[in-house]
Length: 142
Image (cartoon, rainbow, N blue to C red; front, side, top):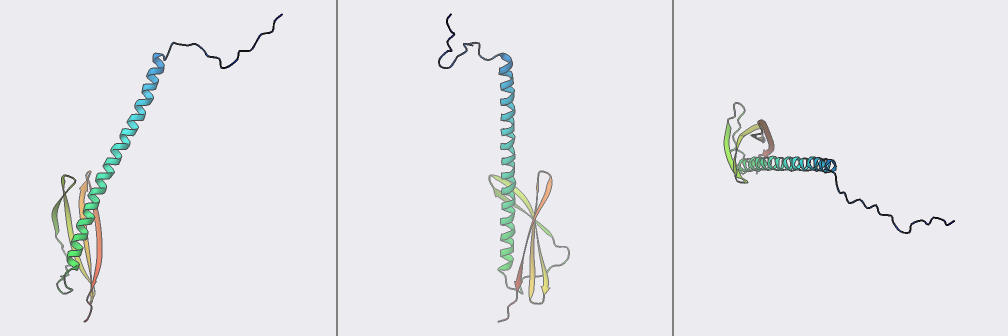
């Protein structure tokens, strides 16, 4: 009697049938969900980029207004405590115009110092967003 010999090397199964239709549909389903998830991620990233650009422009606007006030002499900066009007301004950036409301408030904090507050407001996706900055100006005796 002769002993059975074990095959040498890897054993290959000769199955030339390929993918079945069910395997193909399942693969396409998984691929579709992956691509939809990536597309949603791109949309969120673009939305946050636009929101950040709008906020950055508001910060620049507020900084310009506060520096304009600070460049005046102490006596030229008038204090307004009630019914401070809002000024509407439009800024052009990234190929669009965006409307902002700017409110400048000056309070006399001590006889020799004034607080300047600049509030910038805008609408983004039907919600009101604001940014406020403040600074103090002092009267230095010569």
